[in-house]
Length: 201
Image 1 (cartoon, rainbow, N blue to C red):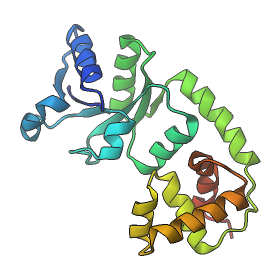
Image 2: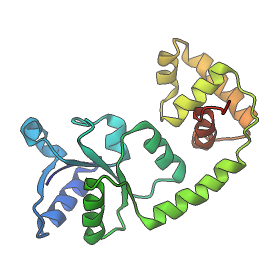
Image 3: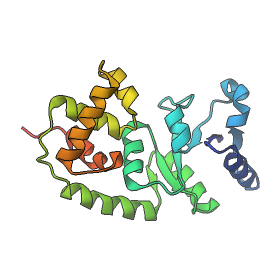
Image 4: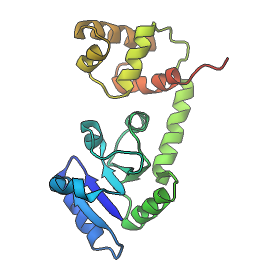
């Protein structure tokens, strides 16, 4: 099984590679540092973190499975990453190598993998989604901006996508914060999830 380790921290990537090499499994491993070899490697799995996902990854076709390595992300951020990237599993850095092997096997068999702690946290987070005010009256443009914010885009990127000025986007965001009664961008993720669900007829 070929695994590409693509983490924001090269030190963490090398440590994970060394730990996996000590296992008796048939893993062929490549780290970001070896990207020159990537065209002949063709991995089955990519182990990524939030930094490498946001930078963009090579070889993310449908046949390549992606495991997100979570080292303390909040539920809003995990939800945002799940919405905007093709992720087949989420594994905490607290997991041992036996969990890693189980995750790889489950994902290889077509399942999705989330460790128990993350499932519990996301279920509690889902409760807070229900509490989000669904009746926040937003304009069409404000709704678009909320969804783009939940995807991790910054003001300039949003302005480019909407063919608008950065100052106009800032004004919209201030208005959205007031209407939704929030003070941080991450707090808009539950609202974005609701906006992305089509209304039933």
